[in-house]
Image (cartoon, rainbow over all chains, first blue to last red; front, side):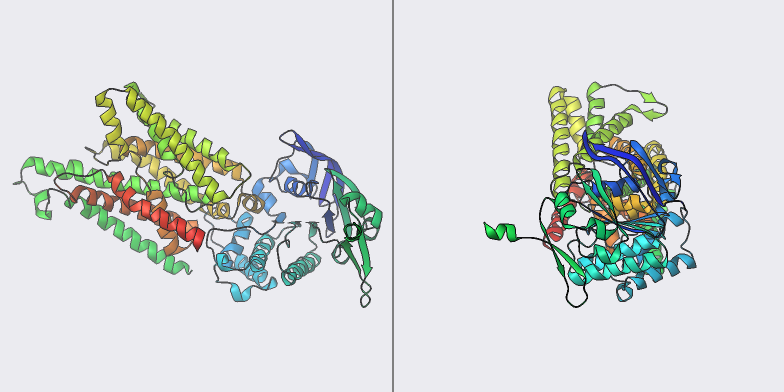
Length: 265
Length: 330
């Protein structure tokens, strides 16, 4: 089986500063990979290399078995969807109009949206639970609702790969879970590969098949969540101690930063 | 918003534009009736005023207004900021500086059928856009404030250079420069109209072609790239195009302020932010608006006329403050 994402010897520097160093790993179709690491480890940059927000100079990236530079940007838009953190927004579009923009890579200039495009857009609006807001102006929505609109738009691209860059940071717990569940469900349904940059160490066990841990621009560990999310490995990556608790009801592992070090002093 | 309602609005704007262009030549210090302009009895000089000055002036005003409005709309999409326009970004000042250098040098040449003053304006506009674009890439700070400050700085810089040149030039050139900086649409004959027309027509067509891409640009550069827009190429094309158009128009009419801010904003209020509708509407509205402002400038203290740039600046200044206030407080 061809990997959907195949990264070899990838290094990336910005203004003379090395951000990624000799990264090498492959992701299989339908696989859900969580990417963890401290701030500035190069996680976001890695995602930006994949959809060409930044251009790589060293190493090779193959998407669906094809070299990244061989893609036309519009063609890449049919393959890769991207969901970053929420941001401020100044222009007014309705939810429907905004999600329809996700159909861009599938449309020719001046081409009218077909029945199929409209059906896909409606489906994604429904999937993300936004049907009641379809005609609302997105600048009037809450952060959580707006992030769902962005998710619906990237899903309307019908991507084979979805890149998530801390999409639920700054959202309330309910919206965090709803967005996470939607992504997880749809990626399973449509066999979409997901690369998810996150700081949520607890839910990694629930959603991901593998975890990639980054530090200082290097890939330190990659593997099964149970093998990577261990006390000594997390300490090595984040330079802080963690507590591993077990929920008595569900037996699920909950990982939280340990604050006892500070309590002692 | 329903596309039928938006199509309808554009149709109304179209009809209004035709009426405004048709009626604008009749207003002024000398008034005409329909009978006069085709009659053989009227003094030949008055008929000439109508055919050789009033009509070309209305046409040039319409094209200039439409082009400034379109430029404002595109800058707002590219910079994701509803408060920018060629004037507030300092691009008009850059183009003016180019033209001032040309006047100051006292040279006169034509290159490939394009007048020298337009080429100088074009270079000035490109320079200003390049500075503003690189300032906008600085990472820290609030983007709105940053863009406005960048525009103010670029404007200041070019206006200082213009003042320096005015100081250095003779009394005649100095007067010519300052009169031209106030913005005026006085033209004689159809030559200026045909000089501007191809630039504006190409700009309108290209911008309309990229209307989906412009929609995506307003959602953020990274989002636009991830949806499949080659933003680096697109922004380059748009900037060169706008520099050409602004350079051309500024060299003929001077830097007419704030049309690029007012027109797109009102059209967005009428039709929403979809550039497939916004592009034609903004062009028509900007054209009509400047034509009307020019009628006002010609008639308010008739038989004398005030420079149209002063009229648009007096309307645009308070409008800008209102927008700024709305953005930060509402």
